[in-house]
Length: 297
Ligand SMILES: [Zn+2]
Image (cartoon, rainbow, N blue to C red):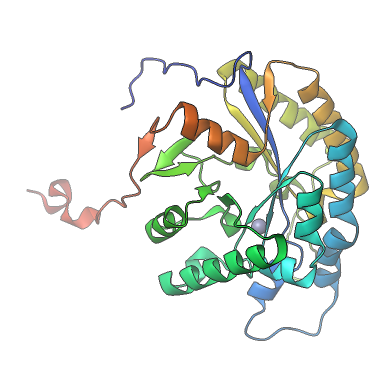
């Protein structure tokens, strides 16, 4: 499929040379629940930092999007929607997309296939109860996937947004994939909980991140790719970071060649206009110990 010959540019909608999505992983306290599931400690600091998201940060991000007139894609763990039953209905009322993000932000490496499937069905049931319909998309906690997850997410008819094998939409065993990018995720720059043995480096300043993300925007425009921004309620809802996002959105919106869309709109565009483009298989290579080079054959 691939070669050194340049691929045809990805066909974004008429008049658009690249795309931009504003996605929010509304983790709030759910990773704390998962990480401490066996023995929750009587400690408040990390919980309070995470509760800042639903209390303050999410509304601040929503106001920013409203002020510039764009819609975001909010991936919400079931436990977060359950603890804050206003959240999904208010996001939907404001015209945003809501999508799945695990139930307890359960980490893929730490659950069985059966547990994953059960949590997925519990999340779907909760979304249906709170907003009256199934969401369109799934994003895995911490952006890991297994072949079983690919099959299950596809079976339920969702698109996925968790992998990064291309920088334009593609498909994994028939599952539409809207790729993410660590370089445009706020957590790698700003996540800092503090405490013994946690996050041993200080967060990066907003000037440096704004500069890096503007370079990503320039590159996305030049190569005709998708710039998928991923921020978190409790991380980028902090004041200076929200102001930085406002500046970034100013750069995005000043360029009419950039298609600003929800992640679901990008998935729908892929399925309507380029179905099957860049199709890959989720196969895991077999052990190298059977390889002839290893066996000396
Ligand atoms: Zn997350």
